[in-house]
Length: 417
Image (cartoon, rainbow, N blue to C red; front, side):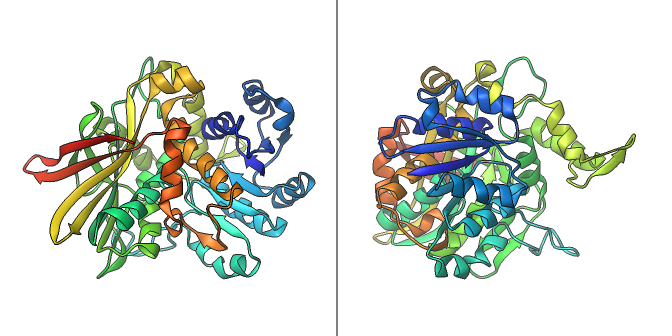
Protein backbone atom coordinates (compact mmCIF):
# COMPACT_ATOMS: atom_id res chain seq x y z
CA UNK A 1 0.00 0.00 0.00
CA UNK A 2 1.13 3.53 -0.82
CA UNK A 3 -0.25 6.27 1.44
CA UNK A 4 -0.31 10.05 1.24
CA UNK A 5 -0.30 11.21 4.87
CA UNK A 6 -1.50 14.80 5.06
CA UNK A 7 -0.49 16.32 8.39
CA UNK A 8 2.58 15.50 10.50
CA UNK A 9 1.48 16.88 13.84
CA UNK A 10 1.44 14.61 16.86
CA UNK A 11 -0.95 12.02 15.43
CA UNK A 12 0.57 12.10 11.95
CA UNK A 13 4.02 11.51 13.42
CA UNK A 14 2.70 8.58 15.47
CA UNK A 15 1.02 7.05 12.40
CA UNK A 16 4.32 7.09 10.51
CA UNK A 17 6.27 5.63 13.44
CA UNK A 18 3.79 2.81 14.02
CA UNK A 19 3.51 1.94 10.32
CA UNK A 20 7.17 2.22 9.33
CA UNK A 21 8.20 -1.44 9.68
CA UNK A 22 4.97 -3.05 8.50
CA UNK A 23 5.46 -5.30 5.45
CA UNK A 24 2.22 -4.16 3.80
CA UNK A 25 3.45 -0.52 3.60
CA UNK A 26 5.41 0.26 0.41
CA UNK A 27 5.56 4.03 0.78
CA UNK A 28 4.12 6.79 2.96
CA UNK A 29 4.44 10.33 1.63
CA UNK A 30 4.68 12.82 4.50
CA UNK A 31 2.96 16.09 3.57
CA UNK A 32 2.61 19.23 5.67
CA UNK A 33 2.84 22.99 5.25
CA UNK A 34 5.49 23.12 8.00
CA UNK A 35 8.76 22.05 6.38
CA UNK A 36 10.86 22.04 9.60
CA UNK A 37 8.24 19.78 11.19
CA UNK A 38 8.38 17.43 8.20
CA UNK A 39 12.13 17.13 8.57
CA UNK A 40 11.82 16.59 12.33
CA UNK A 41 9.43 13.67 11.83
CA UNK A 42 11.50 12.25 8.97
CA UNK A 43 14.60 11.99 11.17
CA UNK A 44 12.71 9.70 13.58
CA UNK A 45 11.99 7.09 10.88
CA UNK A 46 14.21 4.14 9.98
CA UNK A 47 13.99 4.42 6.19
CA UNK A 48 13.71 7.99 4.83
CA UNK A 49 13.36 6.67 1.26
CA UNK A 50 10.15 4.95 2.29
CA UNK A 51 8.88 8.28 3.68
CA UNK A 52 9.48 11.10 1.16
CA UNK A 53 8.55 14.57 2.40
CA UNK A 54 6.51 17.13 0.50
CA UNK A 55 5.51 20.63 1.54
CA UNK A 56 1.74 20.97 1.08
CA UNK A 57 -1.02 23.40 1.97
CA UNK A 58 -4.09 21.34 2.95
CA UNK A 59 -6.31 24.14 1.63
CA UNK A 60 -5.03 23.55 -1.91
CA UNK A 61 -7.18 20.87 -3.53
CA UNK A 62 -5.27 20.90 -6.82
CA UNK A 63 -1.94 20.40 -5.02
CA UNK A 64 -3.32 17.43 -3.08
CA UNK A 65 -4.64 15.82 -6.26
CA UNK A 66 -1.31 16.33 -8.03
CA UNK A 67 0.67 14.85 -5.14
CA UNK A 68 -1.62 11.81 -4.94
CA UNK A 69 -1.23 11.22 -8.67
CA UNK A 70 2.51 11.87 -8.75
CA UNK A 71 3.09 9.14 -6.18
CA UNK A 72 0.26 6.91 -7.44
CA UNK A 73 -1.03 6.41 -3.88
CA UNK A 74 -3.77 4.00 -2.86
CA UNK A 75 -5.00 5.99 0.13
CA UNK A 76 -5.07 9.58 1.35
CA UNK A 77 -4.85 9.66 5.15
CA UNK A 78 -6.21 12.92 6.51
CA UNK A 79 -4.35 13.84 9.72
CA UNK A 80 -4.93 17.60 9.73
CA UNK A 81 -7.47 19.63 11.70
CA UNK A 82 -11.09 18.98 10.60
CA UNK A 83 -11.42 22.48 9.13
CA UNK A 84 -9.55 21.02 6.11
CA UNK A 85 -11.67 17.86 5.88
CA UNK A 86 -13.91 18.98 3.01
CA UNK A 87 -10.94 19.92 0.83
CA UNK A 88 -8.94 16.76 1.49
CA UNK A 89 -12.04 14.57 1.10
CA UNK A 90 -12.91 16.20 -2.25
CA UNK A 91 -9.30 15.94 -3.42
CA UNK A 92 -9.26 12.18 -2.80
CA UNK A 93 -12.44 11.84 -4.88
CA UNK A 94 -10.94 13.93 -7.67
CA UNK A 95 -7.73 11.88 -7.61
CA UNK A 96 -9.76 8.62 -7.59
CA UNK A 97 -8.08 7.21 -4.49
CA UNK A 98 -9.48 5.89 -1.23
CA UNK A 99 -9.70 8.21 1.76
CA UNK A 100 -9.58 7.93 5.55
CA UNK A 101 -9.93 10.51 8.31
CA UNK A 102 -10.11 10.63 12.08
CA UNK A 103 -12.51 13.58 12.30
CA UNK A 104 -15.38 14.17 9.91
CA UNK A 105 -16.46 17.39 8.22
CA UNK A 106 -17.56 20.11 10.62
CA UNK A 107 -21.01 20.92 11.94
CA UNK A 108 -22.89 24.20 12.04
CA UNK A 109 -25.32 24.86 14.91
CA UNK A 110 -29.00 25.49 14.23
CA UNK A 111 -29.51 29.21 13.66
CA UNK A 112 -32.50 29.69 15.94
CA UNK A 113 -32.59 26.77 18.39
CA UNK A 114 -29.01 25.44 18.69
CA UNK A 115 -29.44 23.65 22.03
CA UNK A 116 -32.43 21.61 20.93
CA UNK A 117 -32.24 21.18 17.17
CA UNK A 118 -29.39 20.14 14.91
CA UNK A 119 -28.16 22.31 12.08
CA UNK A 120 -25.52 20.86 9.77
CA UNK A 121 -24.27 17.73 11.52
CA UNK A 122 -20.77 16.31 11.66
CA UNK A 123 -20.14 14.37 8.47
CA UNK A 124 -23.26 15.59 6.64
CA UNK A 125 -21.09 16.94 3.82
CA UNK A 126 -19.49 13.53 3.36
CA UNK A 127 -22.60 11.37 3.66
CA UNK A 128 -24.42 13.59 1.16
CA UNK A 129 -21.78 12.49 -1.38
CA UNK A 130 -21.82 8.78 -0.47
CA UNK A 131 -23.61 7.70 -3.66
CA UNK A 132 -21.00 9.39 -5.86
CA UNK A 133 -18.18 7.62 -4.01
CA UNK A 134 -19.99 4.31 -4.38
CA UNK A 135 -20.55 4.87 -8.10
CA UNK A 136 -16.83 5.49 -8.54
CA UNK A 137 -16.10 2.35 -6.51
CA UNK A 138 -14.10 4.39 -4.03
CA UNK A 139 -14.03 4.10 -0.24
CA UNK A 140 -14.11 7.00 2.20
CA UNK A 141 -13.68 5.52 5.66
CA UNK A 142 -14.64 8.36 7.97
CA UNK A 143 -14.10 8.71 11.72
CA UNK A 144 -11.32 6.12 12.07
CA UNK A 145 -9.11 7.22 14.95
CA UNK A 146 -9.61 6.16 18.56
CA UNK A 147 -12.77 8.17 19.31
CA UNK A 148 -14.29 8.02 16.76
CA UNK A 149 -12.81 4.85 15.35
CA UNK A 150 -11.81 2.13 17.78
CA UNK A 151 -14.75 3.09 19.99
CA UNK A 152 -17.06 2.40 17.02
CA UNK A 153 -15.40 -0.97 16.40
CA UNK A 154 -16.10 -1.79 20.05
CA UNK A 155 -19.77 -0.89 19.54
CA UNK A 156 -20.01 -3.20 16.54
CA UNK A 157 -18.25 -5.99 18.47
CA UNK A 158 -20.71 -5.62 21.36
CA UNK A 159 -23.66 -5.89 18.97
CA UNK A 160 -22.19 -8.94 17.24
CA UNK A 161 -21.04 -10.93 20.26
CA UNK A 162 -22.34 -9.57 23.56
CA UNK A 163 -25.97 -8.41 23.26
CA UNK A 164 -29.30 -9.52 21.85
CA UNK A 165 -30.83 -6.08 22.45
CA UNK A 166 -29.02 -2.78 22.99
CA UNK A 167 -30.48 0.13 24.91
CA UNK A 168 -27.63 2.64 24.96
CA UNK A 169 -24.20 2.88 23.39
CA UNK A 170 -22.23 5.52 25.24
CA UNK A 171 -18.63 6.36 24.45
CA UNK A 172 -16.84 7.36 27.65
CA UNK A 173 -13.38 8.97 27.73
CA UNK A 174 -11.39 9.71 30.88
CA UNK A 175 -7.82 10.03 32.10
CA UNK A 176 -5.57 10.97 34.97
CA UNK A 177 -2.94 12.58 32.76
CA UNK A 178 -1.13 15.63 34.08
CA UNK A 179 1.29 17.97 32.29
CA UNK A 180 4.13 19.29 34.45
CA UNK A 181 5.23 22.90 34.17
CA UNK A 182 2.10 24.36 32.58
CA UNK A 183 -0.95 26.02 34.10
CA UNK A 184 -2.98 25.00 31.04
CA UNK A 185 -1.69 22.63 28.35
CA UNK A 186 -4.13 20.51 26.32
CA UNK A 187 -2.61 17.20 25.21
CA UNK A 188 -4.52 17.27 21.91
CA UNK A 189 -5.18 19.91 19.26
CA UNK A 190 -6.76 22.89 21.03
CA UNK A 191 -8.40 23.88 17.72
CA UNK A 192 -10.28 20.56 17.63
CA UNK A 193 -10.92 20.61 21.38
CA UNK A 194 -12.59 24.02 21.22
CA UNK A 195 -14.70 22.89 18.26
CA UNK A 196 -16.07 19.74 19.83
CA UNK A 197 -16.45 21.03 23.40
CA UNK A 198 -18.14 24.37 22.73
CA UNK A 199 -20.49 23.23 19.98
CA UNK A 200 -23.90 21.96 21.14
CA UNK A 201 -23.46 18.28 22.15
CA UNK A 202 -25.47 15.88 20.05
CA UNK A 203 -27.48 12.86 21.23
CA UNK A 204 -29.32 10.23 19.21
CA UNK A 205 -32.50 8.49 20.36
CA UNK A 206 -34.59 6.09 18.31
CA UNK A 207 -37.75 8.04 19.10
CA UNK A 208 -36.29 11.49 18.41
CA UNK A 209 -33.42 10.93 15.96
CA UNK A 210 -30.59 13.45 16.53
CA UNK A 211 -31.01 16.41 18.89
CA UNK A 212 -28.73 18.75 20.84
CA UNK A 213 -28.24 19.92 24.42
CA UNK A 214 -26.31 22.64 26.26
CA UNK A 215 -22.51 22.23 26.34
CA UNK A 216 -21.21 20.19 29.30
CA UNK A 217 -24.66 18.81 30.10
CA UNK A 218 -25.72 15.61 31.93
CA UNK A 219 -22.83 15.33 34.39
CA UNK A 220 -22.12 11.69 35.22
CA UNK A 221 -19.53 9.92 37.38
CA UNK A 222 -17.94 7.02 35.50
CA UNK A 223 -15.34 4.61 36.88
CA UNK A 224 -12.45 3.99 34.48
CA UNK A 225 -10.11 0.97 34.70
CA UNK A 226 -6.36 0.51 35.30
CA UNK A 227 -6.18 2.81 38.28
CA UNK A 228 -7.67 5.91 36.61
CA UNK A 229 -10.72 5.71 38.85
CA UNK A 230 -13.94 7.71 38.90
CA UNK A 231 -14.07 10.74 36.60
CA UNK A 232 -16.90 13.20 36.06
CA UNK A 233 -17.87 13.17 32.38
CA UNK A 234 -20.17 15.47 30.39
CA UNK A 235 -21.83 15.54 26.98
CA UNK A 236 -19.59 16.69 24.13
CA UNK A 237 -20.25 16.85 20.39
CA UNK A 238 -18.56 13.84 18.75
CA UNK A 239 -18.71 11.75 15.61
CA UNK A 240 -19.68 8.43 17.19
CA UNK A 241 -23.18 9.75 17.83
CA UNK A 242 -23.51 10.45 14.10
CA UNK A 243 -21.99 7.13 13.03
CA UNK A 244 -23.25 4.39 15.35
CA UNK A 245 -27.02 4.68 14.60
CA UNK A 246 -26.42 4.35 10.87
CA UNK A 247 -25.31 0.73 11.26
CA UNK A 248 -26.14 -0.51 14.77
CA UNK A 249 -29.65 -1.05 16.13
CA UNK A 250 -30.02 0.58 19.56
CA UNK A 251 -32.22 3.03 21.43
CA UNK A 252 -29.74 5.76 22.40
CA UNK A 253 -26.19 6.94 21.57
CA UNK A 254 -24.14 9.43 23.61
CA UNK A 255 -20.58 10.67 23.99
CA UNK A 256 -19.20 11.93 27.31
CA UNK A 257 -15.74 13.26 28.06
CA UNK A 258 -13.92 13.77 31.36
CA UNK A 259 -12.80 17.39 31.00
CA UNK A 260 -12.58 18.56 34.62
CA UNK A 261 -13.79 21.85 36.10
CA UNK A 262 -10.59 23.74 35.29
CA UNK A 263 -10.63 22.79 31.62
CA UNK A 264 -14.35 23.57 31.31
CA UNK A 265 -13.89 26.99 32.92
CA UNK A 266 -11.06 27.85 30.49
CA UNK A 267 -13.26 26.84 27.54
CA UNK A 268 -16.18 28.89 28.88
CA UNK A 269 -13.88 31.90 29.24
CA UNK A 270 -12.63 31.54 25.67
CA UNK A 271 -16.26 31.41 24.52
CA UNK A 272 -17.24 34.44 26.59
CA UNK A 273 -14.37 36.51 25.14
CA UNK A 274 -14.97 35.37 21.58
CA UNK A 275 -11.58 33.70 21.42
CA UNK A 276 -13.15 30.47 20.15
CA UNK A 277 -14.10 32.12 16.85
CA UNK A 278 -12.81 30.74 13.54
CA UNK A 279 -13.70 33.98 11.71
CA UNK A 280 -10.80 36.32 11.00
CA UNK A 281 -10.78 39.79 12.55
CA UNK A 282 -8.62 42.83 11.86
CA UNK A 283 -5.88 43.29 14.48
CA UNK A 284 -3.46 46.19 13.89
CA UNK A 285 -3.64 45.78 10.15
CA UNK A 286 -3.56 41.97 10.06
CA UNK A 287 -6.43 39.49 9.65
CA UNK A 288 -6.26 36.72 12.24
CA UNK A 289 -8.67 34.13 13.60
CA UNK A 290 -8.92 34.31 17.41
CA UNK A 291 -8.87 30.53 17.69
CA UNK A 292 -5.61 30.37 15.75
CA UNK A 293 -4.11 32.90 18.19
CA UNK A 294 -5.14 30.73 21.14
CA UNK A 295 -3.55 27.69 19.49
CA UNK A 296 -0.34 29.62 18.81
CA UNK A 297 -0.10 30.67 22.48
CA UNK A 298 -0.26 27.09 23.78
CA UNK A 299 2.47 24.41 23.68
CA UNK A 300 2.49 21.99 20.76
CA UNK A 301 0.87 18.73 22.03
CA UNK A 302 3.40 16.58 20.15
CA UNK A 303 6.20 18.07 22.28
CA UNK A 304 4.57 17.49 25.67
CA UNK A 305 5.30 13.78 26.07
CA UNK A 306 8.26 14.08 28.43
CA UNK A 307 6.23 16.39 30.68
CA UNK A 308 3.14 14.17 30.85
CA UNK A 309 2.33 11.50 33.42
CA UNK A 310 -0.63 9.16 33.76
CA UNK A 311 -2.99 7.12 31.62
CA UNK A 312 -5.80 7.83 29.18
CA UNK A 313 -8.76 5.54 28.56
CA UNK A 314 -11.03 5.43 25.52
CA UNK A 315 -13.97 3.06 25.47
CA UNK A 316 -17.56 2.18 24.77
CA UNK A 317 -20.17 1.52 27.45
CA UNK A 318 -23.10 -0.60 26.26
CA UNK A 319 -26.31 -1.45 28.09
CA UNK A 320 -28.98 -3.92 27.06
CA UNK A 321 -29.93 -7.58 27.34
CA UNK A 322 -28.47 -10.94 26.50
CA UNK A 323 -30.48 -14.10 26.99
CA UNK A 324 -33.24 -12.03 28.55
CA UNK A 325 -30.92 -10.69 31.30
CA UNK A 326 -29.93 -7.06 31.68
CA UNK A 327 -26.23 -6.31 31.40
CA UNK A 328 -23.75 -3.45 31.08
CA UNK A 329 -20.24 -3.73 29.71
CA UNK A 330 -17.40 -1.32 29.00
CA UNK A 331 -14.97 -2.20 26.20
CA UNK A 332 -11.85 -0.07 26.44
CA UNK A 333 -8.26 0.67 25.55
CA UNK A 334 -5.85 2.28 28.03
CA UNK A 335 -2.61 4.00 27.02
CA UNK A 336 0.09 4.73 29.61
CA UNK A 337 2.18 7.78 28.75
CA UNK A 338 5.42 6.46 30.23
CA UNK A 339 5.10 3.25 28.19
CA UNK A 340 4.26 5.13 24.98
CA UNK A 341 7.24 7.44 25.35
CA UNK A 342 9.59 4.55 26.10
CA UNK A 343 8.50 2.32 23.21
CA UNK A 344 7.38 4.77 20.51
CA UNK A 345 8.72 8.17 21.53
CA UNK A 346 5.31 9.85 21.35
CA UNK A 347 2.85 10.84 24.05
CA UNK A 348 -0.10 8.63 24.97
CA UNK A 349 -3.01 10.61 23.53
CA UNK A 350 -1.56 10.90 20.02
CA UNK A 351 -0.27 7.30 20.05
CA UNK A 352 -3.67 5.96 21.09
CA UNK A 353 -5.32 7.98 18.31
CA UNK A 354 -2.83 6.78 15.68
CA UNK A 355 -2.90 3.01 16.16
CA UNK A 356 -6.45 2.50 14.86
CA UNK A 357 -5.79 4.10 11.46
CA UNK A 358 -2.65 2.00 10.99
CA UNK A 359 -4.49 -1.24 11.83
CA UNK A 360 -7.15 -0.16 9.34
CA UNK A 361 -4.53 0.43 6.66
CA UNK A 362 -3.38 -3.16 7.11
CA UNK A 363 -6.94 -4.47 6.87
CA UNK A 364 -7.49 -2.51 3.65
CA UNK A 365 -4.10 -3.53 2.23
CA UNK A 366 -4.78 -7.21 2.87
CA UNK A 367 -8.41 -7.10 1.69
CA UNK A 368 -9.89 -8.06 5.07
CA UNK A 369 -11.91 -4.84 5.03
CA UNK A 370 -13.49 -3.84 1.72
CA UNK A 371 -16.23 -1.46 0.72
CA UNK A 372 -17.35 1.43 -1.46
CA UNK A 373 -19.03 4.68 -0.56
CA UNK A 374 -18.78 6.73 2.61
CA UNK A 375 -18.60 4.28 5.51
CA UNK A 376 -17.90 4.40 9.22
CA UNK A 377 -16.01 1.75 11.22
CA UNK A 378 -19.32 0.12 12.18
CA UNK A 379 -19.86 -0.95 8.57
CA UNK A 380 -17.09 -3.56 8.85
CA UNK A 381 -16.61 -6.85 10.68
CA UNK A 382 -14.95 -5.95 14.02
CA UNK A 383 -13.21 -9.28 14.52
CA UNK A 384 -10.23 -8.82 12.16
CA UNK A 385 -9.56 -5.42 13.70
CA UNK A 386 -9.70 -6.62 17.29
CA UNK A 387 -7.61 -9.68 16.43
CA UNK A 388 -4.82 -7.34 15.30
CA UNK A 389 -4.93 -5.04 18.32
CA UNK A 390 -2.55 -7.09 20.52
CA UNK A 391 -0.08 -7.39 17.62
CA UNK A 392 0.14 -3.59 17.59
CA UNK A 393 0.86 -3.35 21.37
CA UNK A 394 -2.73 -2.15 21.62
CA UNK A 395 -4.56 -4.47 24.04
CA UNK A 396 -8.23 -4.04 24.79
CA UNK A 397 -10.17 -4.86 27.94
CA UNK A 398 -13.74 -5.45 29.04
CA UNK A 399 -15.45 -4.71 32.35
CA UNK A 400 -18.92 -5.46 33.61
CA UNK A 401 -20.51 -2.25 34.91
CA UNK A 402 -23.47 -1.22 37.06
CA UNK A 403 -25.37 1.89 38.10
CA UNK A 404 -24.98 2.90 41.75
CA UNK A 405 -26.01 5.96 43.74
CA UNK A 406 -22.51 7.32 43.13
CA UNK A 407 -22.51 6.78 39.37
CA UNK A 408 -21.51 4.02 36.96
CA UNK A 409 -19.05 1.64 38.57
CA UNK A 410 -17.00 -1.45 37.68
CA UNK A 411 -18.43 -4.77 38.88
CA UNK A 412 -15.76 -7.09 37.51
CA UNK A 413 -12.88 -6.72 35.10
CA UNK A 414 -12.20 -9.47 32.59
CA UNK A 415 -8.72 -8.27 31.82
CA UNK A 416 -7.01 -7.32 28.61
CA UNK A 417 -6.99 -9.28 25.39
